[in-house]
Image (cartoon, rainbow, N blue to C red; front, side, top):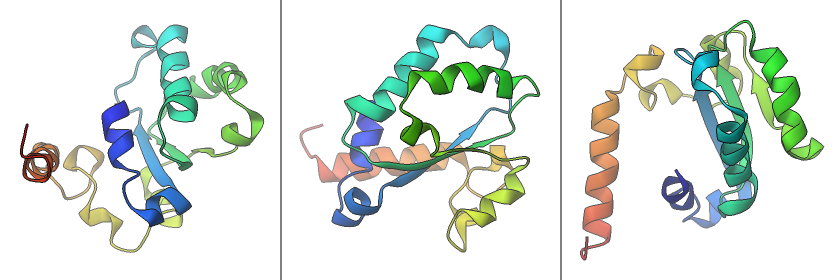
Length: 133
């Protein structure tokens, strides 16, 4: 995850404006969440990568997520916690993302891109950019 975050901070624009993360909690269950895991994720986003996180859009959260969020947001600064937005549905993404965003999001979220293709494109781009891989 940290490697991908680092890759999101390569251009001057990305460094200046930051990036928007979309966290899809569609199949997230209470069983596969731990305080340690959440703490590591939040700490990495805030302190261990150079990527400026402009906002985090959370979609498809389970009903119990707001209770968990009350605990999680205490693990980050108030200013960073304000960057998290819990959306009622993924159609609200249009209020936060650029026109045409549907072309970049995966089928698993109900959009158009094949997630395997997204990963392969990223890996191929890195192989060509870093020939020693």
